[in-house]
Every structure is written in structure tokens, then in C-alpha cells.
Length: 213
Length: 190
Image (cartoon, rainbow over the protein chains, first blue to last red):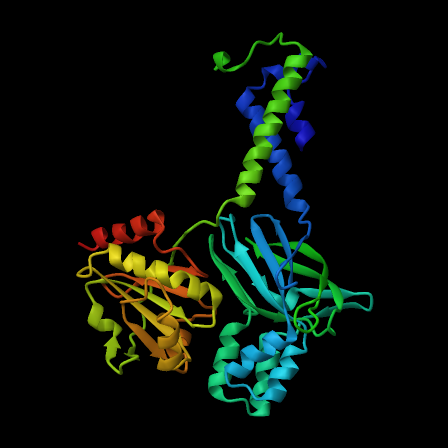
């Protein structure tokens, strides 16, 4: 596409033809070319909080942004104990490889739809689905977790299905059911106007206790 | 149109220099775009549905009914003290509140699932602390009836009690663009 645009008028092979393209148009063409490249190369950006050792993985492309930040097991456990969970239930959740997750529609004019049921955890053992908020909620009800604790749980989790208008975003917890320090890639999907896009967060690692250090 | 085009006999080095400059400009634009802060937006709600009425108590036990605010623009914000973006945006809601005419505008911040003590302890740490009503939706029934699925979510209800805007996720409510958008709504209702 980029080549077609640059050489559209190049009927006689004259290399001076490029000079006929207005400078502004040249900027637009180059910008469009790089924008396309960026869109398909949703590389993973990894950073470590120097104070806590907590690690974050981020990807940006196609106008959306995804970020996964480790939540240490003791941190997750303390959060739910403070919300009224019994210790066994809080421990169970905290041991499930929890991440603080942010998804944002940064610049897509149309609504962006996400369904976590379509996302996949990729490990050397293969691909599998995430354990979703609804799966947990069924367990909490069966275990007799109090209603007020379940309300806090509900709103603290990343919703399974959500639509993001331009500028909308959400921050919530997601779980990956891997042991402490376990590594995985996350294949994430989102849909705009019926077209599904896919990105990968690579080399994500579950927190160890008290941060990953 | 012809005048817009550069000289057709430019040497190759000039063309390459121009392309290089175009690349630099493009990279600069892309880099700025990636680093830019997210857009501060309120999304227009299709069909402007009637907001479901509710009656909720504040931390002192005083009841507030949404329909009592008819004739005003009402910004309804759902939040919790443990939600980081909620915590972050609350001071900007207060700054918005202080910048608007209270005869035309109201803010109701509805906490999900928490008790007065936890809320009071938290709001006391804010600067500025909220002076608008903070209401308690203890079982989150109101939020569910408004089809909320994530917090913070903010709705803007017009003078007729219809939901005109929604914002999912934290915002800087003192952003001039948001203030303009909300003030424009006050003018429409006159």
C-alpha cells in the first residue's frame, strides 16, 4: 500500500517524480505508513517499579492500550480480607496469579468491545481460557462469602464483557491460575465495527510473594 | 493547485532531504501521540433514556432522591474508596463542583457497598474534600439498575431527567473541555 501511494504517478520511471508530491502529502504518506506499522506491531513494553519490584507489561496499538501489573499474593489477600472475605477464600483468590489490568480506548472513534472469554493464556503446555469473574462469583456464593464481600469482589474485577467508547477505560483484576513466578503470553482480542483484532503480551510473569524480588 | 507543488526538477538529494524531514515530522507526531494523555471525553448516550429514580442516604442518614433535582443538570458518579481511578478523580469532581452554578447543577457521588466510616476516613484525606452529597448504595442495586458494569462510571442527567452522557473510567473533571461540555448542556436546557 505504501509503495502504491509513493509511485502512483511514476509512469515514466523518473525519480524526480517524488518531488511533485506536495511536502505535506509526503508527511501524511510517511505518517500513514508508520501508523500502520505500529498498529501491527503491538510489542510488549516491560517495566519494573524500582521501589517495590512489581512488574508491568503493556501493549499499545490500533488505538487501544492494555496493561497488566502484578499483584503480589499477600497484597491481593489483604485486599479481600479487608473487604470481608474469610481467610481461606482470600488465600484461594490471591494464589491464582492476580494482575491489575487496564484496558483503554485511546483513540478509536467507534466503540471497542472486549470479551475476556475470548482471551487466551499461552504457556508451553498450550492455550487455555482465563478464569472469569463469574466463575469466581459462583465459588464465593457456594463458600458462603458474605454479600458485602461479594459486592466488593464484583466491582474490583475486570468485567468479562465491556464496550469502551473513545476515552473510556477500566481498571480491574484478572486471574491466570498459574503458580507464583509462572510465565505466560496473553493473547488478547478486541472488536471494532465487527472486525476482531488480536494482540499479544509476551513474557508476562505472575508475582511471587511480597513482589517478584 | 499547481502552485502547491514544488519544482518538478528538484535534484535527488533535495527529494531525499525532504523525505527525511517528512519522516522526522511523522516520527515526532507519532511519539507525541503515544505519550499524549488520554482524551477527556463524555460519550453521548443514544436515545437519552430516562434515568431510573432512586432514593439513597448520605453518611449522616439524610435521604436524597434523584427526581428532586429535576430542572438541574445532575452528574451522578459511582465509586468506591478502594478503586484507584475513583480515588484519583474525586478531587477533580470537587473542583468542577466549585466552578459551576449550584442553582443549575448538582453532583451526587454514590459509593458502592461501603459504610460511612470507611468513606469518611477516606474523604477526609482528599484535598479538596468533596462538599457535594456522597450517598450510599450499600448493595449496589442502584448501580445495577443503571446498567453499570465497572467503576468509576459517571452519568450526566439533563434537566428532564434523561441520561445524556456517560464516562466509564476515571476522568479529570476539571479539564476545560469537560467543563465546557457540561456548561453547554446547562445552556441547552434554558
